[in-house]
Image (tube, rainbow, N blue to C red):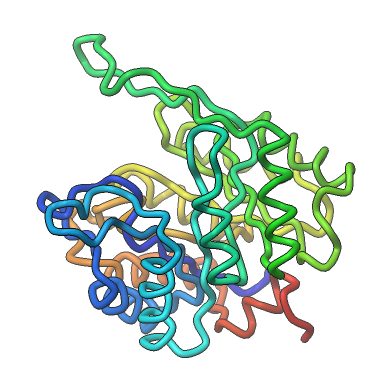
Length: 291
């Protein structure tokens, strides 16, 4: 099997830093990235937060804030691959597009389909007002056009089985340009109204992917996600974790930071008999560079 690419999702979207140990400032993001990098992560998936006092739980689409955070990460982790988030609700995607143009990351997330984004409480009440994470084809195309302009490889985020199948249609339609690298699927499991975090379901999904594609799994939850990480490694998928996705280690203990989570993820790869890809090896595997 191919070497395992490890991605660290450093901080996420809305988690309150007053409640959980998520990094916010450029220095905090760089320190967490360095720990993950030293543990084997070659890719950093980057969200940024507002930097004003008391606003660290809110996302920012300020290109200069993004540049400050990404610059600090690159300084702390020489050769690291940056993967920018792009997910926004609604038609206005000017913020993410401005960030892609400012940073020109090697990779950016490309949410590949819409989802009723829901969560229900034990008493039957909604955890938040029901919402639609809208990603129509026209929006996907806008992102792909700017990624092509900036030399950025799209990572197709798939929250449900139908979205996995839709990516194949995007490829057949020519929306993914050959120079943008191998088709890459990110199977997002554990969102309450999306695909469950289930090893049996995971094993079925590669058959619906385009030829010569690469895939990874984003697993959201607690310690129950770790057997599915191991299944991902066993099946030849690439691996991702971080404080965006979980706060819990395989033994159920709460992680102190991203480095501990990536150390556990690297163990899954090694248990499957796979070695960890360096950043340059990851570039080759994703089609971003030639061997």
